[in-house]
Each structure stands twice: as structure tokens, then as C-alpha cells.
Amino acid sequence: MLLTRVLFAKKAKAKDVLVMLESIVSGHRVNLIRPRLDDKLEIIRFDPWIRTMCIYKEKKKVRSM
Image (cartoon, rainbow, N blue to C red; front, top):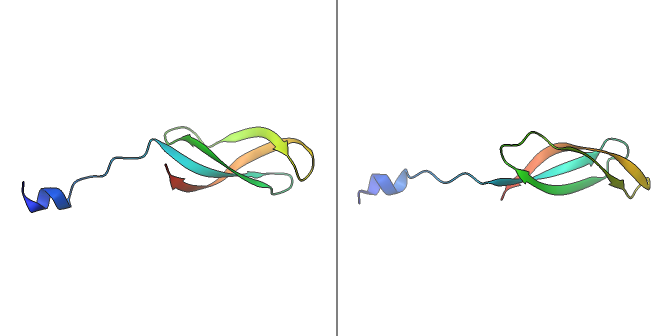
């Protein structure tokens, strides 16, 4: 095997990503795993800071899984 083939081998892309979600009401943050090719997450979840259900929106990607 040639050395150039070893050096330029492409890495496989990750199937999932770890993303940080943030509450739009209080700013509480939580991390969840989502598939890499899906749209950005926007979910309704319990917020412990205000003790009620509210919307969490994806803030940023933390890392690949």
C-alpha cells in the first residue's frame, strides 16, 4: 500500500451529533443526541427553573458521536 493512500484516507462521518438545547423562556440548557442529517431540534420539555413546560431550541452542536 502506498503511503499517500494511508495519509489521505477519508474518515467516516458520524451518524449522530450531540447538540445543546436552550429554553427560550429561562435559558436553562440541556444536551441531547440527534441524527446528523435531521433538521435542528425544537421540542417541548419540562423546564425545572420555571417548573412548567416550555420550548427548547437547538443552540449549537457540541460534538459528533
